[in-house]
Length: 279
Image (cartoon, rainbow, N blue to C red):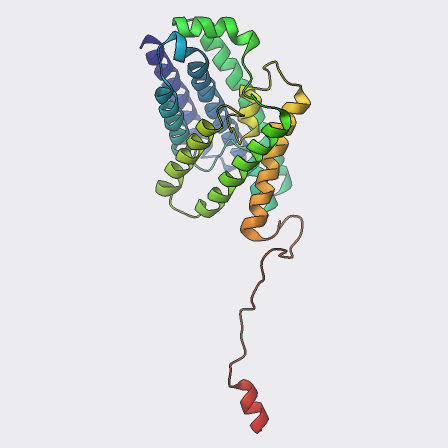
């Protein structure tokens, strides 16, 4: 229980810090990329602690899988409420770019900021673990140099798993993006929690290149190229497939709808031809 209390205190500190930064930055629209930095920092920092509970807490702290699933859901829900439009997810930023919703430079700045946020989260979590407040964190601090990879299957199977999860996530996100936040945020948190729990024995279904970079890229077991294929290229592939299925085309790449037949808006009245013949 002491480990859980320490984790809750850590989550609270991260949330309060990011919420304060978000309030300050929203007054300056030109610094929108920093909102993505703060969003990514919160997401990665909190998920690093959730991963700690999964790796150590379940056998050293007596915390069962139900606790980790609940905490993951609460983290994702809180992130959606606090960060709002700042997703902290490079895949979603690139999706908006491909939909012609954001220009090139802001997109590049946002993606770069998200990875910087992931790096800062690694530093913050590492410092927190070094304090060794509980036995769980003492063990995690000793294990931090040789963490366990989240990729537990061959690269091809991992690629297919992340691609399928990304396809489902982006299709749902595209259908929910114009809905009220009261509907969109909880449903997104439930979906991400479900996908992560379902793919726990495969890739953990991060569906977020910045989160994957922070949680598993530094762990031994696979090369950087293999991690890139599974956790960067695969979500991007799933996102592009989702856009094609949802819109029928990729606006940034080509305007022609290649999947769905577009009906014309204006129709000729049925009696129009008969009237012309009489004349």
